[in-house]
Image (cartoon, rainbow, N blue to C red; front, side, top):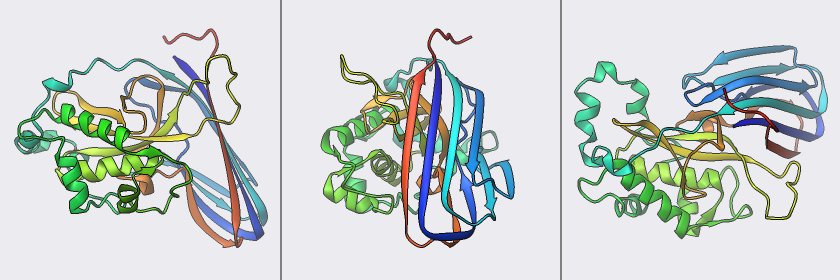
Amino acid sequence: MIFDIVHKTHYRYRSTVVQSLHLVHMSPRAMPGQIVRNHSLLVEPAPASRQERIDTFGNVEVVLDIEEPHQELVLLARSTVEKSLPPPVDLTATTPWDALDPCLHEAAQQRDVDILMYRCASRLTTPTLEIADYAAFSFTPMRPVLEGAMDFVMRIYNDFKFDPHATDVSTPVTQVFAMRRGVCQDFAHLALAGLRALRIPSRYVSGYLHTHPPVGRPKLQGADASHAWISVWSPEYGWVGLDPTNGIIVRDEHITVAFGRDYDDVSPISGVLRGGGEHAVSVSVDVNVVAGATAD
């Protein structure tokens, strides 16, 4: 399938921002099964300088230096992305989770360093003993790693309630676990905390999800949203995407923007300001299938 994605972020500041510096992750990532046909990023006011580069994790990031005084900032990202179905995965035909160490160490020079890095807890995915115990229930001795990971993801899906009002970007994973509610970012961090407590390589993925309106109702413009899920590594399949918010294996309706250790590595926009004071932000996302288009 081919998707058109429009992602608009609009900041309004109480007082004038004299200067701002921003780091932006809004460029979909070119990767197996995903081709970026077009991408553009419009910024208003126009930055004095704009640098595009590849970050530590292989994501496209843009550095913006805005020197024009402003009380509003608008970023409009437009992308056309072609997605193909990933190959089928037999979750039961993967290495046992507690036998991964030999696979990772026997030929270390052939393994990407980032596989080992994604076994380690990050600032936002540090587990407690309670979270580690909760995850361990899915990983009995010698259970195939992806089978256990999918069982863990399904337990999060069934045990936790999606509630967009329960948390914000600063809510710690311990509070999410205690409340049993949150949003996609929270569920991804919880899954990563549990998996990394067991030293299972897993990473945070940010992007978009093509959603479907209720039967008989039109799709609302701007009603989509940025999405987050995880991917788990096995020697047989490499990285396989799992979505704790929806309890599914990632297929061709998830569009990847970036991946890293947690949200901090891939937030759509972050930065520092001179001035501005309090601010309000509105975000709208549209993900639509290109009519009549077919993948090559």
